[in-house]
Image 1 (cartoon, rainbow, N blue to C red):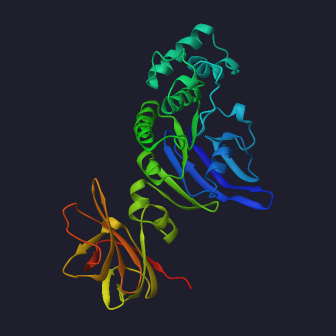
Image 2: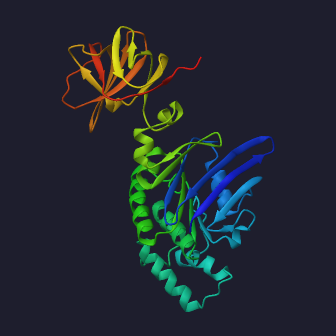
Length: 341
C-alpha cells in the first residue's frame, strides 16, 4: 500500500506541529520518521493512523483519499512504546482481541489458528497461555506486534516501540523486526528519536525539524551528504569548529584543515570523532589532550584547540596518548556551512 502525504498541516491551539509536509511512502517500504522531541514525527504518524485529523492537505492510501476516514476503517496496525496489552488477558487472548471485534468476522477455529501462526512468527510458540506480567518486556513488545498484525493491516505504524527496553534487547528486536518486515512486506512507518535505530532499520529516513522535513533519503545519503548543520548535528557525535573559507580551502587560524566547496567567508565545520586522526608529531590542527577515555573497542581522546574549541576523536586501543600531551589532529572528512551571524 503506497501512502502519500500532500501538504499536510496540523495545528494544536496556537502551536503548529506540522508545516505542510509532503512525502510518499512506497508500497512495502520501511520508512523511519526521525527527529528530536517536538519535531512532529508522532503527530504525522497519528494522522496517518486516523487518531488525529489534518487541518489541511491530504493523506492518500493508494488512490483513496483517507484524510477523514476513521481509524477503524483505515486498515492500520499500531504498536506503541508501552505495549498497551490487556493485563487480564493471556498472550493468546491479547493477539485474538482485534480479530474478535473486527468487522471481518472469523470463526473461533480461524482465530485460534491465526493466533498460533502469529506466535510462531514472533518467536513465542508455547507462550499463549501466559499473562503479560509473566513474560519479559521484549516478549511483550513481540505480542503487541503480533496483535497489530492479526487484523492483516495494509499499513503498520510503530511509535517508538523499543523506547522502554534496554539497549541489548532493543538491538535484538531491531534485527528481528527487519526480518519480519522483509518476510511480510507490509508498508511500515517507524517513529524514533534514536538515530542508530532509524539507520539500522529503515529503507529511507525522513529527518524532521520543528514540523518540517529537514532531509530525506537512504541511510547512506543522509549520513554521507547531510544538507544542513541541523542534520549533521542530529546524526550522531559531531565536533563543531569555526574557520574561514577562501578559494576552496578552510583554515582555522594559520592551519589549513580541509579543502571543500563552500562559499568564501566565515564557516562552521562539523567533523565526526572517527574522521579525525591523532598526530603525536603535531601535524594538522594543534591541540592539547584534556582527557582520555578507554573503551572496549578503542580510546576516545578529548582535546582542546589553541582557540579553545573542544574536540573528541577516536584512536586505536594501542595508541599511547596521555592527558596534557600536545599534538595535532588531521581532518579526513568534514561538513562545512556558512556561519550565520
